[in-house]
Length: 236
Image (cartoon, rainbow, N blue to C red; front, side, top):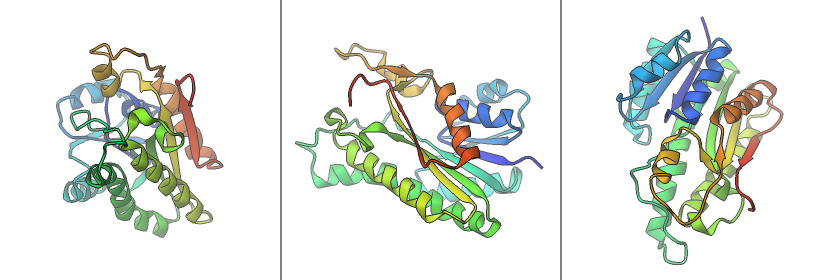
């Protein structure tokens, strides 16, 4: 039986590149996004790779639990999870100088809590087997002060430290956790598409999702580093 990677929050950019890269290594892919609108095109893009597709909002606790159960039943035990959902329809960042406590907390609820619930759901089985990997996508504002990302930055920092600490806690267990810290617009991705629809008065560099996915595979194989950083920003 092939190993299974669950790609949660798959899109046409990094999520699909992750699935393609692991699929080349013989993984079966389980792709999860909020709707099934683009699932046929994803399966076509992954021709030759055994692929299951699911529609679920993985930021919803009940739906996350249900889709993980379906993946396990239909595809098999999950060896690796990539977690990278992004809500492009949600509210944008609010400047920290005007963001109240509720605004900052909302970012934690949208970014950190779903990641922790995912770990809560899949980690016990991984520890029991003594194998498995947890990969997360995070923002560069979690490492460097980036005022333009305002209320999202504290939650990004919390997610980054959560994964780094999880990595340290999992040493000697056979289970790996790592984070992809990303600064820039990911080509072919939904955020890139939406951002470039209008002139913002400034430019943001782009990143090739295939390059990031290649590094994700290296993290999975080598397990020496807890983080890989990618930036298209001139300064941070």
